[in-house]
Image (cartoon, helix red, strand yellow):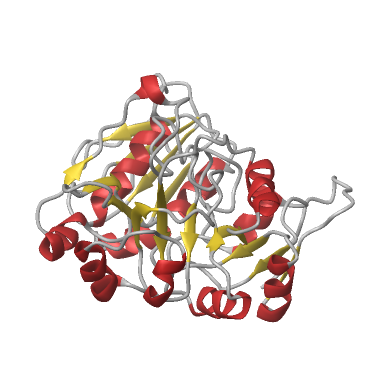
Length: 338
């Protein structure tokens, strides 16, 4: 894979890209930052037990400290190294889903920095499925805090090139694991109380979650709390946002351009070509939500870099992975005047 940085910028530290897991592990153990592939999106990894390294993650992303980080471990056997209590529901989910795109919020151990959890008592933890992430976690022997490897609030990265495009000179090494297979962030469920609460829909469908542990509640976004400590990442009213204004369509609504504006269309499924659009990205021909999810962020990035005035995106069926995809669209479009 050919990966390039911006030629116009000269910085003391530049970003290397490769598949050297041992080099990545040694950098992490020395307190440096590494772009880590997972099955969901690329993460900006740091040693979760090193407060200075965790602080560097926030600085690199320009991420507010009230937005917590997810901690990654190599296996469910290491869950006790991160959390203080493991309820029966957590055992059921770990056995059924891990490694995979599900994060559980559980009471944290004191070894995990308060900076990781935005000062809250719960820590989000998961076991990633990607083989390079697994190998990196084994070689470091440490839990790794790893939010998405992009500037805060922007479109999540699903390739090594996306990481370089967003964080050139602010991450030491990007471990190139190819395109992410799932393509959207993990589902986050809080097990901090008797009733499980889904804080963020993601790559593990809510229907599958409920089949394992019964009914769950859905957290409601409160824009008035956007500057308060968040129980999980991805809960702010505006997030995952392109620079280009984003206008949303219903699943069956006719796609038309906006008068006098250069428009791009993000769509899916079998649909006749729509006239007047400067660029059309069809992320899936068969309306397969798994394929849609895998291609979603890359398609949105493509349109965002096309010099358009507005991106028009079609919503997805509100079931399965479509719930997570619609969540990303809604937060990315928040505040945009249609």
